[in-house]
Length: 357
Image (cartoon, rainbow, N blue to C red; front, top):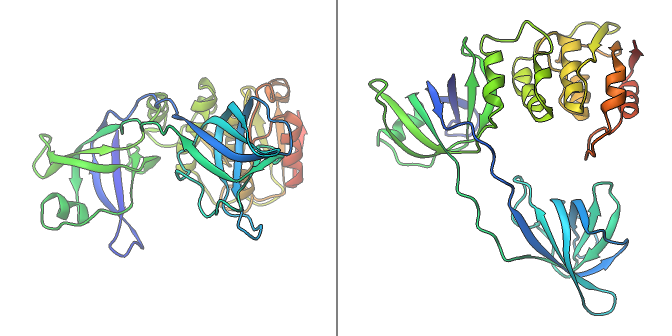
């Protein structure tokens, strides 16, 4: 499997190919367990009873004049302890996972204005004055990957050959199929070391820190090595997480142009046992094997705006719909359709005529 490393030009306006690599060693690994952190919600006043298991939380800093600032999130939260304070206020200690895309602390809230606390259903649970992390935990060590046999160019070559000293800006790594087209995005590597490669003169082996790819990806990518699969339902062998990852190469290989409005598409529902399976099946209904038409409801809404193979309104004939009717909604989902009827309501709201075959 070959890879391409991309970076920005000096003006940060255009992506450039910085390196093409023959192999990535150590790329596949189980992701580390999420770091659980402890936070104290100081001066908390409850608007509703706090359950021990809070789940997904939204913390919204408030400016002094009551205007909301940017939301901040915690996942899989649970209450560890409460301690009475003045009047009806308490200090509440919670343990939770801070998502990777969140900064270490909510930005822009003076402690006098405080925060509001809501759950995933937008119910306000209460307000509190200040937030503090209790006993900060040690971050896990970064995951190392070796990009082998890299033919480097542009700013990266200048840095590696010592002709220039400057920080290297934004960069990302893509996996390539046999024709050299992008198969799937891989991640955002941070280059920490390099050395001449034994694979050939002028080539380098780069050591980078980046998030590993789940091992199931090593089973998915070979199915796309020669381009878009010719056989439908290859995604059906994977569980929900594998099906979600299947949609990465499906998006990278999406096709066009859009067909005219008023068409009829047939969805094979035999394997729609979870929402990820629905999006895989919908993509193939519209665009054939390996097709893509969104990976979430917002993504389907975007696809309906054009450029993803079909023009609305259209008819969707859902075969074997009883599989989804039986399976969807059996597990709690956050910010996703939890039931078969909710999926139908969404499709019909988007002027898609759904026929349950």
